Figure 1: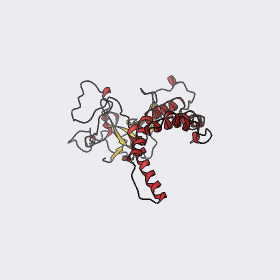
Figure 2 (figure 1 turned 90 degrees about the horizontal axis):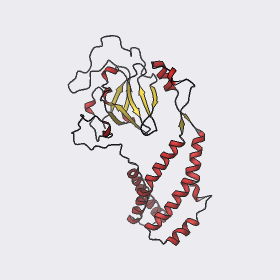
Figure 3 (figure 1 turned 30 degrees about the vertical axis):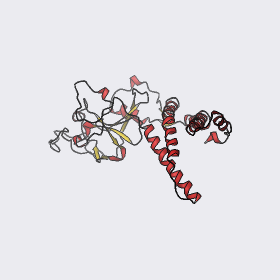
Figure 4 (figure 1 turned 45 degrees about the vertical axis):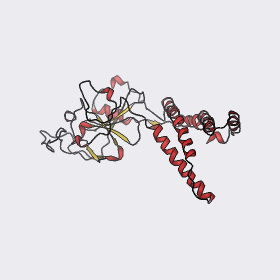
Length: 292
């Protein structure tokens, strides 16, 4: 994907925020640049820059100045972090808790038309008069990639395990396709419930919790200082919630359910009888095997 550089220089009137879409870009492909002259609105053939009519808010601004981050409610209940320029408070990108990804405001890019989309997501939120006719895939919501990614990782790890086992046994490598299929089927079945289980744990026992500074929200105002103060109250790591999730997921409920599911599903895929499957489950050591 093309490397897209961003500068916190565009004033709010130039960002096209009314109908500006988010552009999902890998965080490693986003570079924050020093302040620059205001750019022309992003459309093909536009001039590179236009002269400023008055001194800019960004005159003398250091490119290392701290960005303003504000956590706002979202439909999922997990919240969305809005990242703004510390001077003009223009929204530059949003973060939905997805690692290594930034949802960049398309209107802040000087040449947004150079970023070709691979797909359009969240199209249910667009206005009816906005038509997307480029033939790219469209999704009402964000498509979940958890199952496919987990299956791919499971397949890769099983192939690696077969290679290592063959090397240790000092015998010619013989690829076991049936064994690979079993593990991938197991992953496809167990990945979705595990994914939603982790979401449930994080929602009820969040690893990071907000810090209340004791001020009433109605008295904070809407100025730059209040936004910056609110943004600096960043969530703190909750050791209690983290340890509780670890115990519930890795040592007790989560571990027990996953181990039992493994023996049942793998036993059925191998054609084992229910008696043998039950015997395998009963021989599991609660203190050892369930703690993996």
